[in-house]
Length: 281
Image 1 (spheres, rainbow, N blue to C red):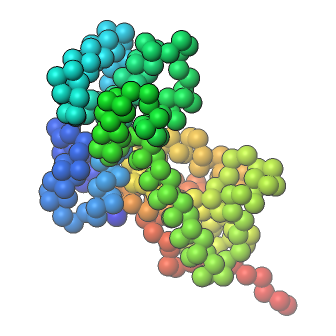
Image 2 (image 1 turned 180 degrees about the vertical axis):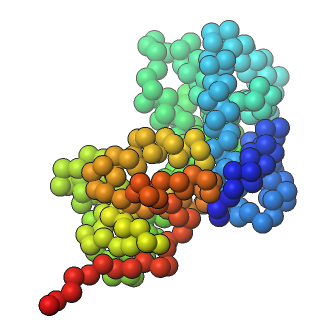
Image 3 (image 1 turned 90 degrees about the horizontal axis):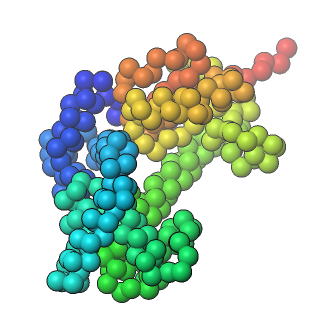
């Protein structure tokens, strides 16, 4: 799904005043019925992550942490089964999984002899049943399963979706009888930063030569695309030549402005591939 900048801005504007819940996503789908659920979910998640990055610091001051922790303690004393942490996160407009991390880290600081390491915190968030306090374990679990943008559950889902689309791309390349090297094969050859697939014989797509293909199971907005250009795409171009990026959930049309410089954007696997083969004299 390719959107104009104006269409994207209209969707993004609608997200400014809604909480990051599944109910909000359903309302968004009703508001923009012509857009796919996957595209809206990707935009929804990216816009919320931008919001969290902008407001992250204020939730991590000592005053804020102590305030949240005391509110958590007071809340569970009154009713330990109530979704105290989840409601607190929604009230202060912070991701539930990130609120759970703040409270868990503060709890362990109070009850453990040494400050908890990041790996310990991550492990407990992945498996809240290992948290030594049953009430807190339940509160953390509620935050994890009700967070649609952050947390170990969301990370696992995103990883699976990304892998699924890489497998899909591999199957489509094989179906077209195109020879390629994948990321693992390239790293085995000593390359550190590689696209998902290098074509052993270049192809032409819409009149542009393609040497490599990168799969992105997300929507290509300005923020993410410019970051990818800086961190990945131009490096691939510099090392391997011109290539193709597939944003499976769409992108902003105006971002496809580097075709002549060697980076082509598509929202699906191209159907008009021209194989460049050597003729025998």
